[in-house]
Length: 213
Image (cartoon, rainbow, N blue to C red; front, side, top):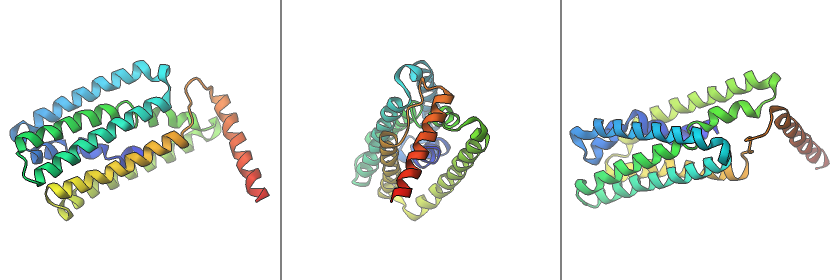
């Protein structure tokens, strides 16, 4: 989940927000627009704090990832329309709407939840090593995604190239949604001891099934 947090493209929207909005047609207003998006993301994080223990981790993650997909679809659509000659006065709003929806949805799902859940997955004696490894993978993924964006923009120039790049992030969001639905355990209301017991049981069942095979 830490790797999926990064390959969904979040830091592209953060590090390169002004460039994305400028390319979309906002010009001198790109920086102001990016600041407004960041404020919206802060409000979404406040909403998460209120509802995370009421709704549970998995439902919020699923809802947020669907919202991220909607945001990515908008920027892909806006890029395609710009490529087909639609006025930037129209397509620029696709980019801004995309960024608003994507980053707000991220703040309800893949943004804070790995921070919350990673420490809940590991037994006490393995927690430091497990969390450390997860966050090493997180930062490694962050580095790879951030570095590759500039390379991809040069390799795939123009609005159609941009549509393809953000379509790739859509693909990873779909993987994240499948992962949340099929594999991510719900840790809300589960004590660390109960989670430890559940992990041990799952491990023993897996070992038993492997031995039988």
